[in-house]
Image (cartoon, rainbow, N blue to C red; front, side, top):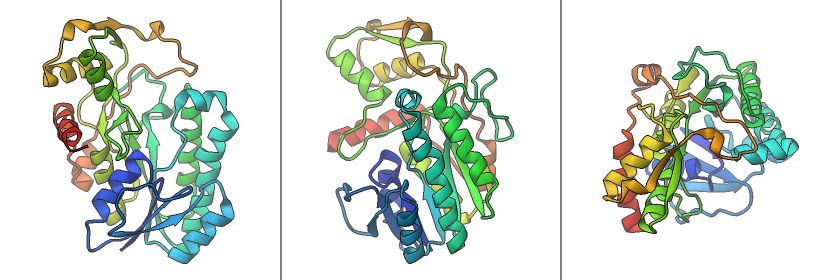
Length: 300
């Protein structure tokens, strides 16, 4: 089976390449804008592909002719999306139209990665039938992209996820675990919100969920997230406990104390029963995710 992934240099892309390059039954084609920044080259083919360039997308997909596409590339900085709406729409909506066109021309199955930010956060945790109502431009762009996919004349799936965390090969991205660990090790007091609720998702688990969808060509919407609904404060406390750091440095705060350009949905989190039952998806707990990151930090 030939699988093409977008955003190979990003966090999810790296985890997908790590996972799929080891699978002898998969002919993996990794794509991203510009040069290959992955630290290894075996088990896959790399093609430069700018998802905002329609002709480039159609040319690469036409040459590769994948059986399935996992589209994880996106503009995900919520505040930047609020400020630069044109760039956000180009990367998150127009580019999806190009990917869909490429899938239609080649007959490829599409697994499109979406987000909990399509919801207003008034009634989480959500199942797959919940109606979207975004409160940020990022959320609106991802909601619009879902509509593009749903209305496309192709075979498709949408993998919705929440608060993805993990360690990139080049340590280019922080996350709540790394931030809390470093802050407490440095003796810094930190304010962490107690009035937002999420299902933190280990990047390795998201990659596994997308792979299950793509290899089974399972159609429809699937919630692919962690299995717990936690506040960032609870995540910070678990992190401090795991690394035996001083919890007294963690102060409870509410979202109104942080100045952010874009609004955040207060209570999301996902119900993942469908993915568990239909795909065999089985994510780690947040404490297991911390342990995996700690193990990876020892290797870096």
